[in-house]
Image (tube, rainbow, N blue to C red; front, side):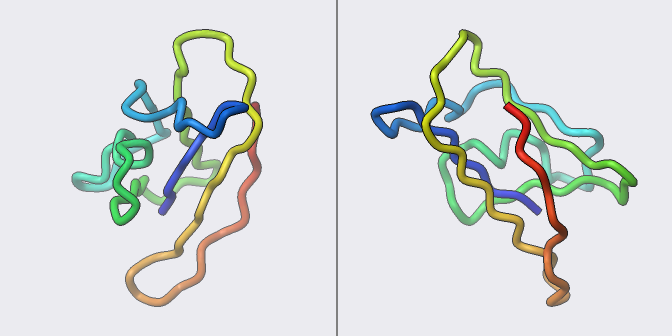
Length: 86
């Protein structure tokens, strides 16, 4: 599961409600839940060997900070490690 905030140099959420995508979707955990501005929503993919999530900011943007939270699952299992690619 993933929560996401992408900010510019003035710390605005430049990813808010922008088009987002992920490798697959588990039930109703659509990719847009990661950047909808609501911190208690999350995305979830099917079980994947190389899961990914992406957001299209629409224009070239200077990004000063990316905050990702990998929260694990509802069964108490920890989240997996992940990499940020800009």
